[in-house]
Image (cartoon, rainbow, N blue to C red; front, side, top):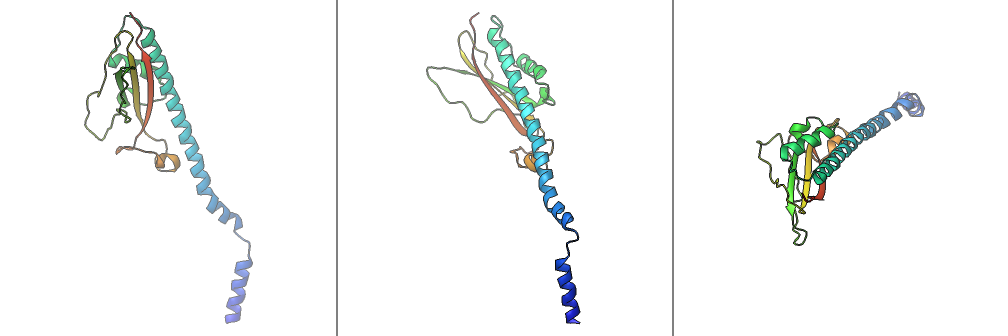
Length: 178
């Protein structure tokens, strides 16, 4: 009886039936994770480049628009109109404009002013329109929902309590004379 059991056990270990299934079961989750992470990275890159482009175009308009001083809502509308792939841009985008003295440089906060759906709505932290020849820093922060929040890159991103990650863009310009 023991000899028969040992014979069956030897045949079981030598059998090659199901090799492809085992390889598939081991590699499939890794391949899917890499695929989903690649798609997530593609969406993040596209949204970030659209935000950067919209910021550059808007800052150029502000810089060259002598005689005008667009306000917060006007600048936000210009950026949102140009940033095509940022969903709910009007509610998820937050702007800061900070006046800086280039001769007496002081550090600005490293944490951008972002929206957070898990907190109460707070007013804009800092938004000051510059005068002629003043150095201005414009920083935008958009909160985005991950496409695949439970796998790969979407799972490992730094997110807030609501499950959104922040895309930021910063631009520095000098207000042209009027």
